[in-house]
Length: 387
Image (cartoon, rainbow, N blue to C red; front, top):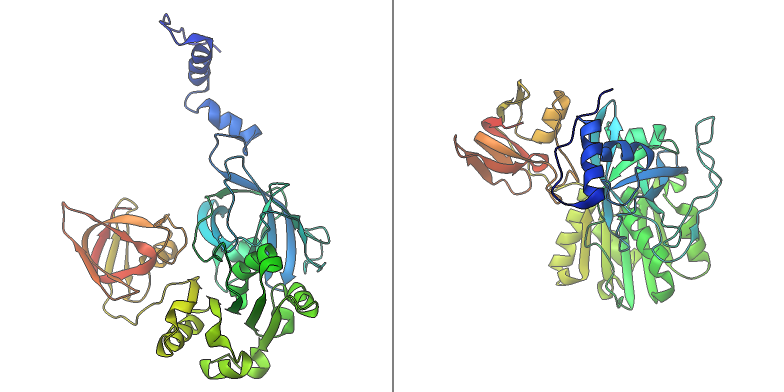
């Protein structure tokens, strides 16, 4: 190979000359692209993580132990992290709650993984000292990323990371009496809080719903905390007892109104809680975390054109444009998928969309595009997206 001749260098030193030479030799790639192959977690690289262990929690939930790159800035218990995962050659972004400690080691009870070949050691360990983090993922029916992570993720897999975000956290000086109201995977941010703060909490009640005892994520750990008196655990197994309603609350947690409450779970549970806390005059004592936005019943819909992708489709008035585009094979930017992170923002060239959270209509007319969030917007007529 013949190397290009460098023009006389007027300054900048040996380091700059070497960098310029390296860039010319590696064109069209950059030296950083080659460094990423050998040291993807290095300082200065795009933030990535390497899956170290995959540990089963229930039949459809796993905890992933992740070694983040050197750019990771840490997290506060209860926060979430966006991860980018390659599925069928397409990078998809999703948000998951962090369940690891920030200051000391923890260990979960051993649970064999359901596949014939285990993908994990008997327990998962992580701590701030070793620099590892963990997320816990529940496989959602039809969920492309969650199904992939639960059933196909293996140690050694590289993923993309964003910095931790979210304000579903305990204050520096926690209240004397706390209620954690959770259902299903809603227990994940709460477990992050419990693992980090349990020794500083005085009176904690955990009211958690799951189909049955075996489906309680972190069930053994929660029961162990209850056995030693660290928490009051109230399990509701919905297969036998039905879903928790606000009418049940007074019997299950008689002093609920005197407790600061952190609630996370399905939209129906959170909607009912917000209504109940508001009606009883203690709305300021309720803190919620939603995995999906509250969606209004809407109509209309229309023809959606993804201009640069050359795809046109018909979409109803209740399907997020993000879902409609992905279903049609359009490469859609995405993030939290609930209108918080703004990772799915694209220009609406012309047409009208409806915000599924509040029903508001946004319109655009060429040549003045408007930025919209595709994860919480549906077609409200004909619309063209610059994607």
